[in-house]
Image (cartoon, rainbow, N blue to C red; front, side, top):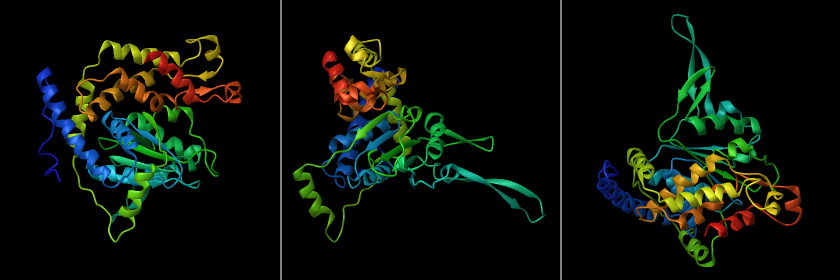
Length: 339
C-alpha cells in the first residue's frame, strides 16, 4: 500500500527547516496509518487517534471498555500497521509474574555441567497487548511496573533489556464486572493515557455488520517499521510548543491538585496528578498535532487530551461521590477555565 516502510522514512531533523520537512513527511505517513487501521476498526476514530498519539509520544495506554468493542483487534491491527513485533498476554487470576517476564531454567550440558539459562517471556516484544489486565492479581500486575517505566526487567538479580521501541497497550474491563482487581495508583500513573472505548454509532455498526460477516475480512499491511516509528518519536520531542500551551498545561494540572483551587473543589479532590501528568500532556499535545498534520500544538490539543491524561491520575473524595460528582466532571470544570 505504501511500498517499503523504510523507503519514505522521515529525514533527520537538525534545523527548523528539517523539522518542518520531517513533520510533513511523517504526517503523510501517519495519515496512511490511520486509513489502514480504519479499514478494520469501524466507528472508533477518536480511539484510534489517541492510541497513535500514545505510541508516538513513546508511552503506554490503558483502553477501558466493555467486552466486544474491538479493543483487542485495535492493538493487533496497530502492531501490523506500525511494523512492530507484537505479542499478546491474556491476563487471568492464575497468571504468574514468570509467565510474563520469563524464568531461569537449570540445564545440564553434555559434560555434566549445570548452568542456568534465561527463557524470555512474552514481555520481550515491541508492542505488548496486556488483555484484560485487571483480571490478574496485584502481584502479577506489578510485574509490568518496572518494564513500563525503565524498559528492562530484573530476573534473579540479572538485568534484561527490552526491545526498542517498547509499548504496552492494555485493555481493561469496567471494575464493576466480576473477577477484576483495581490497578494500583503507581501503575496507573505509568500509563500515558486512559482511553475510554464507547459503543460505535449507528452507521459504523451498520457498516461493521456487512464488513465482518462476509466470506472474507479486510487485511492490513505494514506502513511503518520500528526505525521509522522511533524517528517519528524523536521528532515529536523536537516540535515547538508555544508559551500559551505550556501555561495552559501547568494551569490545568495544578488546578487538579488539592489546595490549588477554590475551597469547594479542594474538598472534592482526594489526591491529584503529579508532574508526570504535565510531562504527559507536553508529549501528547505535540503528538496529536503531528497526527493531525500540524507543526505545533494548540490549546485545543490540551483541552482534547485533558481527560485521557488526567482521569486515571486523580481521585475524588467519598463526599464528592456521594454528591454525584465524578472525576470527568471535575476535569471538565478545570478545562473550562483553561479554554
